[in-house]
Length: 353
Image 1 (tube, rainbow, N blue to C red):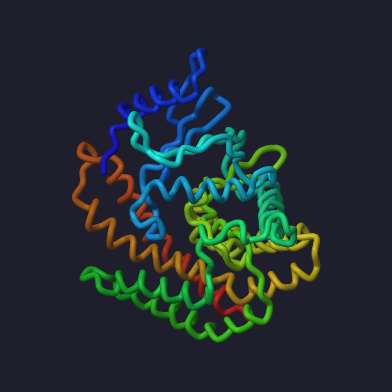
Image 2: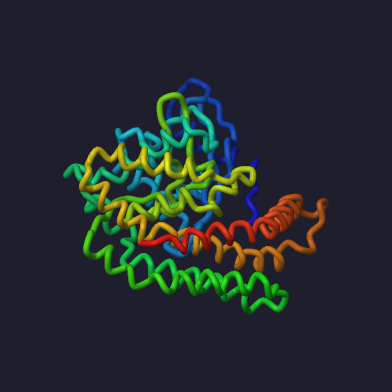
């Protein structure tokens, strides 16, 4: 669906004027266009997050559920400083505005740049998020049944990775070298599946964000905040650590590569920030067992996405669709980076559990 952005903004302005019932004029400007939301800056101090798309199958094509889902999470996190503070919610379309939305505060700051300062703040925020269930006020029961609970995460992530890779295997233009790399990664991931039993011996479930691309962080002088919770779930905190440290995630930031010393710095900062040695020992076991699987899934997803991008965008011209041309350019960069990302992943998979 192609959105008429000027018309949507005009509708939203009329709707907000009626809803806010404020005689004072207000400003409304498009701030960002995410996968699921259009985000408007309201009066410089707030954001309006309008749900316009469903980013994954859990919402079954119902964009209202995107808003409801994020409202549940922001209510849970209210007052923690981990994310936006919720100021209002409209969960049903109205006669003059056919979308749902949230109103939150505006967070000052910029995206993650992987400096030691930023890594320190991100590690502290993730530790604060992951230890929340230790406080009865933040029991995960507050998030069920709204959020999916991930059982047997190694098996789930492996099967999803295998499905993404199969899309590439079935592609007539699949490159033999890439096929071999994917098969090697899947083989090594499969050989580690028996370690899943260790997670059952040391159970721990919390809210995990699951989408740590650099621009889903807002970092300022005081703290690092997480935004965009559409992929959140209840599961092992190692899912967040693995996605944050995945070379596929990190290279999205200007093709960056995280140094091993910075990786160790981040993990040690995180374990210290948990302020609970027993919990740190449990999560360390989880990370050793499960941490690599988000990267396995991301690598296989990357190859599967090439197939989709080539089918949809390969013939597009700059005049017809600048965004399609930009997507093809990202695809070619991704293909060049793939062997290096694969090598990093192989080294991770070869680490002892």
